[in-house]
Length: 317
Image (cartoon, rainbow, N blue to C red; front, side, top):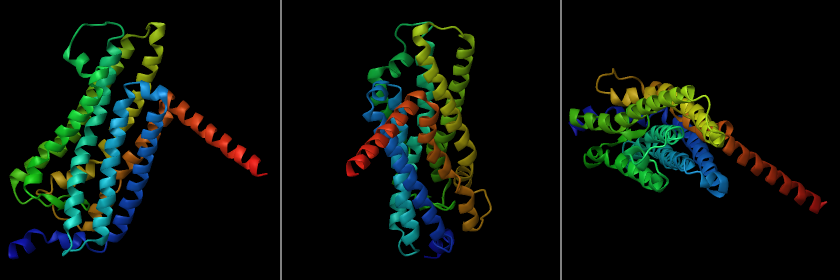
């Protein structure tokens, strides 16, 4: 018990005065993100033109992974709001799902950027069989999404086997305060590697796409739509990459370097990680606003709803 009190002293502060307002903030923003991504998924899958574009399935994969991640954060908010030093079970459960689904979400921008590069680069120089072409072919889309999700989940196995989920020192339910170097390294090579690795891969393919488009100013007329779509996705991925790089940094730093950083008041940690939720809140709406296919489908839906409401009003009158 003495060791427990010394090791987990921060838990008392975790369920302290800042828990209530932070739980309400997490619950409200996470609910908005889940609802936004459900709408985005339904819009994509219910619109034939969007559904038939295989590239959009990677956007759906990102949307579904964000739905699961922030649904975990809804449970996280409940665990923080109702939990206490003697009631820590739900924080442990929600923390496991927060980390596993978060690891999965981090990888999709890189997959989307790579898919766009290999699809667009074959326009001018069609090639035969290659691993990249096979990996990003139409029939491989769903298996690739499922494979990445499986890898992301399995990468957290060391944390799963060592009961490492619970009250994260940065203020949410994620990874408990690490008590050993091996556990810390397990976190670094799963969550942190997926986060920074995805940022790096997305940046590399973004640069290669920009270079390719600059070198191929003139393209066959029939491929203009594909190039315009790629440019729009590039704009979205640029924002989706840069926003988390800035807004998610405090979360990664506070957890990944917790054994090196001086201990700070819990309310300061929670203020620092508040921006983490903002980038994901913007993702589906950025895609709808910046990608013409989605923007047109969204406006058609709005006009359809408006027409239906007007007809109902006229009928009542």
